[in-house]
Amino acid sequence: VSSIEASRPVGVALIGSGRMGAYHGATLGQRLPGARLAAVADPAPGAAETLAAALGAGAAYTDPAEAFSDPAVEAVVIAAPARFHADLVVAAAGAGKAVFCEKPMGLQLADIDRAIDAARTAGVVLQVGFNRRFAADWAAARALLDDGTLGTPRLVRSVTRDPGGFDPSRVAPGTIFNETLIHDFDALRFLNPGAEAVEVYATADALVEPEWRDKGLLDTAVVTVRFDNGAVGVAEACFEATYGYDVRGEVFGSGGMATMGDGRRTGMVFSGPVGRAVDTVRSDQELLAGAYAAELAAFVDAVHGGTPATVGGEDARAALAIALAAAESVRAGRPVRIEEVSK
Ligand SMILES: NC(=O)c1ccc[n+]([C@@H]2O[C@H](COP(=O)([O-])OP(=O)(O)OC[C@H]3O[C@@H](n4cnc5c(N)ncnc54)[C@H](O)[C@@H]3O)[C@@H](O)[C@H]2O)c1
Image 1: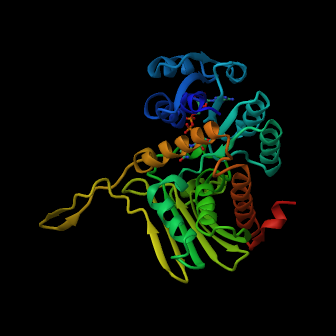
Image 2: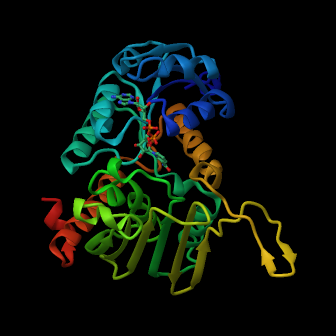
Image 3: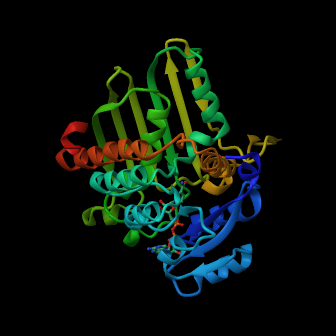
């Protein structure tokens, strides 16, 4: 590409304009010079039009297929509900568009395989929304792994605690693994570069909403992941933390330890009669604002440069395999090997 082409903003369509989509839309429309919000698509009546008008997008569609056939659209950002992801990736890639897809890229490995195949056949960029990799502290820990400072990883840890307020009737079985811990499973892989999970043991329960236990709700879970280099990972999640949104990580290696995420809203510490207090972050979009912007910046760079995404379809597949093994481990009450769920 010429330097003029390389500096031209990429026309991006947002597919799905809900909570996450609106945030990504604002990034594409207002925070990212390399991108231009060309269109918004959402089947909910009026949803795409409202967001497109607010963000100055070029077009609004109720059918994502219209965005895929829009010549002003070079790339798409998919933020629809998970069950639609794989079909949307296949359709967008089939139309020659570069694809950024929110996690999880699919709910079955066969669906992710279809998505990977479609992007490969079309020769388009395919990136998955594992934003934690782009948070400054997590990226800095990875740099210490890559330059050897941390040595060989022995123990890796990733923790997610949501602020609560969820409706248990709307939480599908497997959500804690497929939608929440999928970030942590990817984080464990990110902090143990080149290694792959071989065996998973999970324990999970409904501790926030115990009356929903009999209906299959899981709102609290701990997952142990054994890797092929011997390192052991622990991922844990709970859907309710009284103090806000909390994401933390640790990699403990032969050369030392790195810890990530202290959840402070600002650097201010208040000291008073009862002691010292810090204010905490309340939402994912507050805690990880920089990471959400950086992942889309990396996507746009990959589209401009014609280079592969740094976190792609195979990463989506590997994290989902851990999620499926964790769900099976809870069901069966025993450790589950990755090969059992990925046949
Ligand atoms: N990376 C993160 O930290 C993070 C955080 C929150 C959500 N997410 C992901 O973002 C995605 C969306 O989550 P959300 O919280 O915004 O959900 P949401 O329910 O707020 O919004 C979903 C939107 O998609 C629309 N939609 C439904 N079917 C569609 C289709 N076939 N094509 C296009 N749009 C469709 C809905 O009308 C709705 O506006 C999920 O995959 C979720 O896992 C990621």
